[in-house]
Image (cartoon, rainbow, N blue to C red; front, top):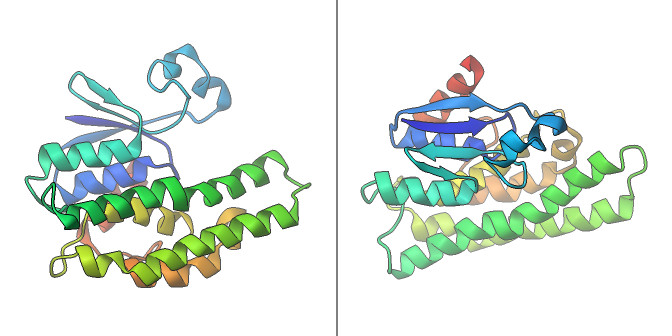
Length: 215
């Protein structure tokens, strides 16, 4: 059985969602997000930079969520949720998957870190610049319409587990400052991906939320 070391509002969300889509057996191990624990030798042996998630599959341990998604698709999906390797469609699938993490995620993370590190002394101009970059990324997803290229019928693709994380992260119902600040991004991102922060109707997504609440 897969073990996913997870904490709320972390990238473990995307791995757990994919496990639900693939009907994989897994267990969730809650991680203490206190800085003292995440910097402890015990946790640094799991993740050398002290972050979450970590996934175990037998003797294999992994600590990058995007790599976990691709590993699970390659090992367990049996051709589902991604185009055949080596095809132009697969190239675009990879492009948008890594765009979500390498490009779209960066300004969002910078805003979160800025607000956390400089609480009460934020630099409005810096936050506005980060928001503009994030909005540019959301527009790129919207205008590129990767779903039109990559979806077969109504099949969901693995890249949405990357995008879906950020849409959930930016849900306007979220009370965190970062989420409140990014409301305008949702119009573009939701239209392009067909997902919404708390409103995805896929059965696996609903099971995911019930599972996380129960655990």
